[in-house]
Length: 281
Image 1 (tube, helix red, strand yellow):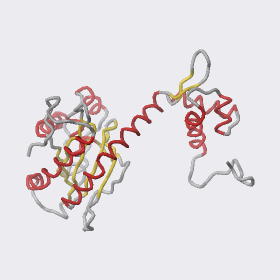
Image 2 (cartoon, rainbow, N blue to C red):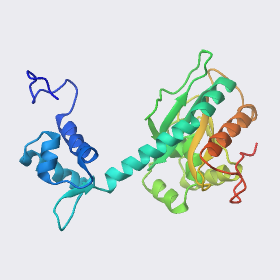
Image 3 (spheres, rainbow, N blue to C red):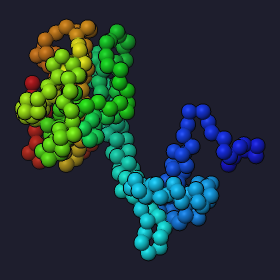
Image 4 (cartoon, rainbow, N blue to C red):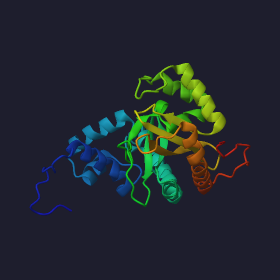
């Protein structure tokens, strides 16, 4: 409830009143029920009917609400439901990966990351630093950060095990721009690299995203055996000037164990569907 002397039209600095109102309408379905009319939405969101109608019309156009042809009332649309499913899936994934990811960072002394594929990008779901403080040069990323899939180790893993039609769609909307000194900018060369990634179960980024940055990634599978995420270890030439094969030999086994552990926590059982679960070293 608002305080008696609070201005209902007052807006906190650096916030969007329009966004707040739109979210209030979506939240009304949680508070009041799955099917609501304009009057119910306006009352719950504390808006006039005309204002509520404008926001509802926008949400319908964007796919976050749907209108029933008979009752003319509204329910959550496919976009809102997809957000819910994604949030639930990411929460389960993050919870399953939390301990193995931290253990991987502590064992190797390098930052460990977890990401999923969203369109042509990867999105960071979790990020763990070693418990023992050490100086590391690293990319400025955090949970929620988006990076292009084509030039990241986790992106390569997620594309390598994705449906070919999805890979084509991603590459069709991707500008294979040079991001680092070794970025793969030719589509056919990238497809060969993805085939190698699928064969070995290990994604490699050797200064393809940024100068000096290297990373290794391994796939995480769900109960059905589908690759739903990737885990990686990021290193920088400024902290460890080793050859890529040496990096792979030293970090690969721990990375694979972590990926296997998270997959098992998600219900995956190796060999049950004929899919090999370990990254070949």
